[in-house]
Length: 101
Image 1 (cartoon, rainbow, N blue to C red):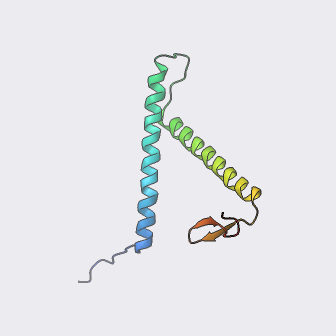
Image 2: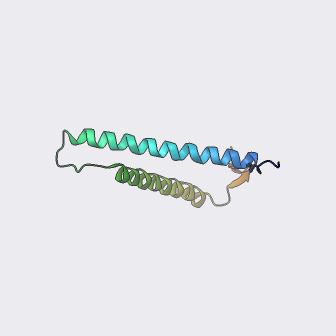
Image 3: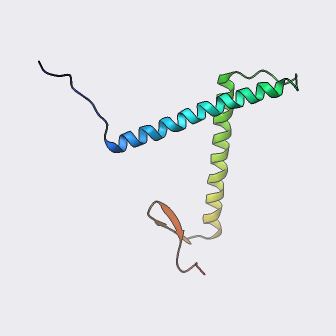
């Protein structure tokens, strides 16, 4: 009898999948924490609406996108203030030697 075919991921795919799953679990946990804190705060402020998990997840994702936008604006401003001063070295950008003091 022939065995069942086994499909396995490459090492790089395994690393990417573990990284993605880590951040998905982290986002879900933060959404639970936000929901708990919001509803706990609601006891002192009864005019606040109740927050379910779906809305807390949407709030966490929206805030994450806003923070990402802000960080992109900061990095873009860095390049606009010193055009051509940064060069890519490996995975990061470093200041060119002519700009270093």
